[in-house]
Image (cartoon, rainbow, N blue to C red; front, side, top):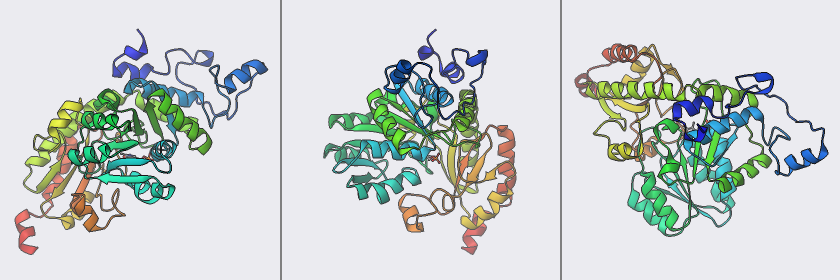
Length: 403
Ligand SMILES: *Cc1c(COP(=O)(O)O)cnc(C)c1O
């Protein structure tokens, strides 16, 4: 069977490694070579001019990196894929390669912090016209796109309140005006959501998160329509934000267990979200799998799983969060997400530290919000851990009395 038609669990393992490597090696070698030698000048010239397959210089392509690119290409059902040194490398290279003076990009208020810095601080300096819309206001986004737009940039679910945007609906609006649709699929992973099948032209990921899955390597990937991926690849070759062989190996290795990890994390997150939602000391739980979440219906239609990112607030407020978080045993209090170990932190000190409390309020981020990235630990242990830490939090009634 062709790998192209394999199920995701099979593709995660086999894509990029269907043939044995040099010396019959069955796992991808970490090729640290910067340069590649040729005996035949005609062959060298053919590879250098793109007429034959091969490698010339590792800033451009590398055999270990290619394995990772092939895995994401097959998992997302894309024509082509390329990679970058970090997720921000993927995002900035894509935006700078496809936009330029006089071009217009439409996006959302709730994009990843680094992405919104590009939109607000850097792209306008290159005469790119940037319009950011209220994230779940589909009518406003459609209206802005209809005014004329070169690139629509989406992210769903968003950070940290897990807002959901309808990819199919907005991609259709973008294509009516000939805009390219790019989706950051980091939170969902290719196991839970495939934006290309919903009409997006390009999908990118911070491979640092779920794809790697072990918080021990950084990378970014981009895949989708061949012509667009090649335009971004040519910019990255020159711009130099290339992924190295060692992190590529770790990410490709992590991806072999992607489906196993994501299925377990999806199931654990659903149980934890319900547990927290029913807890008297918890104020709000943001998780797209809950029927009460405003994006639940769209999530049901466009995702095959709700993921394992959630956030929640405590009735007793931020002072209680300061007691609660350090009392958790099976959680790293740290930035980032998508690892085998559970990670938690307040957006006011992690992803949204640069914003004022008014700006956070505008995005609907309560000051006492806790972002919680569910790992692969035993879910009963995680719930017991939450239970003992919630036990030391003051009763909401006491908090009200002292407020
Ligand atoms: C982390 C993250 C990024 C940036 O990726 P890095 O690998 O840290 O550069 C982009 N988008 C989302 C949604 C992320 O979570």
